Amino acid sequence: MLKMTGIGKSFQGVRVLSGVDLEAAAGEVHAVVGENGAGKSTLMKILAGVHSPDEGTIEIDGRPVTFGHPIEAQRSGVAIIHQEFNLLPERTVAQNVFLGREPGRWGLVDRAAMESATAELLHSLGEETFGPGDLVRRLSVAQQQVVEIAKALSLNARIVVMDEPTAALAEHEVGLLYALVRRLTARGITVLYISHRLREVFELADRITVLKDGSRVATEAAAGLDTAALVRLMVGRELDAHFPARAGGPPGEVVLSVRGGGNARLRDIDLEVRAGEIVGLAGLQGSGRTELAKALFGAEPFTTGEMRPRRPRSAREGIAAGIGLVTEDRKAEGLLLGQRVRDNALLVARATGGGRPAVEKLLERVRLSPPRPELEVRTLSGGNQQKVVLAKWMTVAPRVLLFDEPTRGVDVGAKAAIHDLMRELARDGTGILMISSELPELIGMSDRVIVLRDGRIAGELPAGATEEAVMHLAAAS
Image 1 (cartoon, helix red, strand yellow):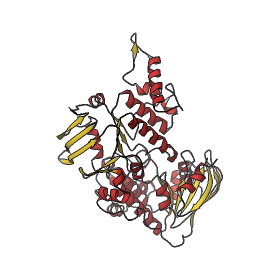
Image 2 (cartoon, helix red, strand yellow):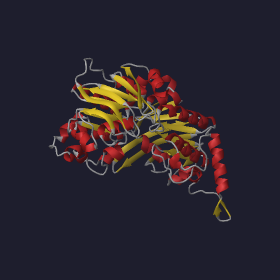
Image 3 (spheres, rainbow, N blue to C red):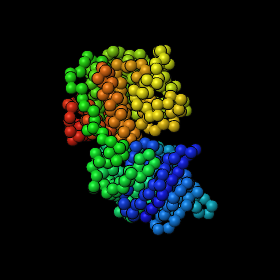
């Protein structure tokens, strides 16, 4: 179905792709993996007509194609479903699916025909939980993803690119995406699957192409690789056991304590975090994990209960109490993307009237690559942006750090570096509460796991608990 040969691309004299080959068959799930900066996005943008290659050729279904615009790629059957959906929230599902291509009758939009065609597309995807007349803003993230896929099918797509499709999905929604992918491939559609979550890659992909530094390292059958071998191809080295060893010794004094904490979303929260330990916080989407982190920090404060060192009524009071929050959405809530790395690293220190720490040393400690404080943050990869967020909090040395999805959307190398930093902070006496939707990460990093369900604590599990035990508490009725 697809053959890309010798693809090369440079931007302002910087080589980002060199002689990349990629082939994918009809009905195949072909994963494209690599660290951030490996060239995955540029290769996909060339396929989608966003960029033109400097060298190389593209064939679809055996015929050479050249794209000067994304619309030309769409007409040739290429559709991309981006990590951040391209939907209008105040329009209906049908209006989004046929945006700019509305069927007409007598010079007017034929709403009945549009909704009927959308209903057929949703039915073909096995979707029965919403209809063509529903507003997109009322849909869950998983349902919005179905709308994006329906839109691709309405364009008669033969090649569908999925960019980090599970990044915003809860654990129980991932299986729904798998079923959708299998429905697409059963129709002969080629799926190019980009993900940092290697478990998904092995569960879905028929073949895997690995990119590194703008070049193709290998294309292998997924069945012929294991996680260790794939990581080695991606980063060029072993990542020891994926998770750094726990400290081993007993934790220190209690640095954060809540008794009977509650607000509009949370009830009867009792928990403690001690110096030097990493406490995992698990739960399904909507269980109240992010709300709990924001309540502890003071951004959405508790209205009942007791908290030590004190119950903050604002984020500023939370910082003054020695609490930091690494937010789930670093771009919207954690960084000023148009400002320099240096200014972002000093955000908290300046806001609290603190001193001027040595930014260069901090950036070296968080392993920022490249360690250049004058770069604009928006030019960095997701993993490096997250390291800047960490540096921002390390300037004020909080006693408690709350991590909400600390490795979402980062590559395996940056993920390992962030895990190492978390362990390092814990060894230095910081108490850490970590939210993660990736159960292997949660279990591998945590000294114990607290499970939330419906805004309450459903139970606590020791280090090394099984995924099944976590899910039983999270989903039990």
